[in-house]
Length: 293
Picture: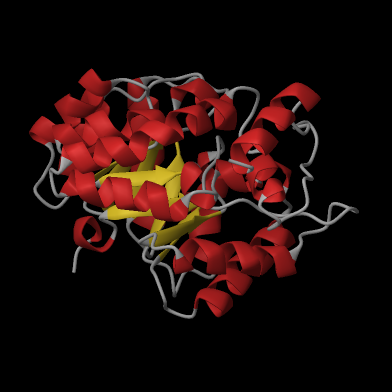
């Protein structure tokens, strides 16, 4: 089974819960994993941006990977996030991290350096050639400061054997359509923009790696499955009540928004690591009111 078949549907980009002393709360992490998997998502993505990876040290990352494999125990596929703006370091990480039980590596486009399209291509080519697992590209210009153009994505898809897909979070449906038009038949294309998933499903994407799937896994993954079945009337009915959620999730910061929802649901403590701060009181109250409906 190729990656496009394995990762069709909804992947949840999971949070990293913390205790009051900001250590990783593994008890809460297990609760979150069970909640998400029990409510029907197709796979888990750990150590993505939603997991606050910029503030996790190497040992914490390794502990989270091993704990996630142990607790999921084969129930759903697992994708590991490994990215950065130091190509050499990312290459070393994909060679050293325990990836035997993962199906793929999700690697964000280099941030801050603002490389050219050729630089982006060579960055991913180096990682893919070193990785024991297929690489899923992650284009998120709102965070990285540089858009990976459709032509670069397609060049990687056609020329680099171990590049298996893309999480496209460019907030640009036209770019997504171009990738879908010219991709190889087995190349995975998923959305990274929760609020655009429904229209992008109509364009032919294979699913989504989602933040909202942390807190509304059943409703969100049911919506995606309906869209994949081209039942857009049913998908719209499920998506409409989530429009306010999408706004609250990202109005101040991700993952402050999703952690606020999970806190109101009793699954985690409402703790993030600096430089991220919890939602302001007014937005937190809106989250609380939504959860109380």
